[in-house]
Amino acid sequence: MFGCLVAGRLVQTAAQQVAEDKFVFDLPDYENINHVVVFMLGTIPFPEGMGGSVYFSYPDSNGMPVWQLLGFVTNGKPSAIFKISGLKSGEGSQHPFGTMNIVRTPSVAQIGISVELLDSLAQQTPVGNAAVSSVDSFTQFTQKMLDNFYNFASSFAVSQAQMTPSPSEMFIPANVVLKWYENFQRRLAQNPLFWKT
Image 1: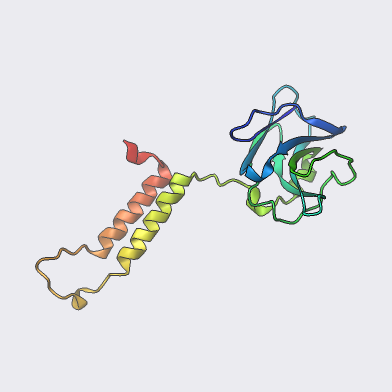
Image 2: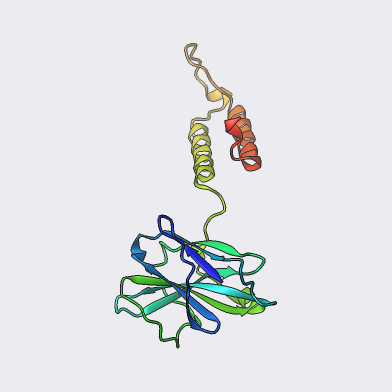
């Protein structure tokens, strides 16, 4: 019913069923995992009105499992990418796996999927830093670079009365830099790869 993918590793499709409505995947060497993808295989849909909450569990310093809600998958949203690298030091949250007697190894984390009502999923709050940004790193870098350039160039702005005539230097009006900055932002928002054409 579910699959789990970590970059550089084989896809896992054999979840361990620990209860009628609960499944887990083992994540060995979890300290070296940044993101995990959880997805439905497409063979068995959720029953009508149901979805799956996705949890991440890692052993704390005493070897006890710490569960954190990452998000959910549904028939309408059959896959999700979660960032787990920053969660390993966080605190646990309420979870449906507490009474389960799940076999675990100290260096192995787990992804747990609990089949629940969609209404219940809508009321749950995942940990804040588990969601992966929908803006790719190139777009983020470009935006930061634009902001930095504009702020840097603006820090040298002087009024025409403050200018000292210097025939050997060229001056660019600040409004021209601002216009370029706004146009570039607009084009980047419309198509992050516009610069390739």
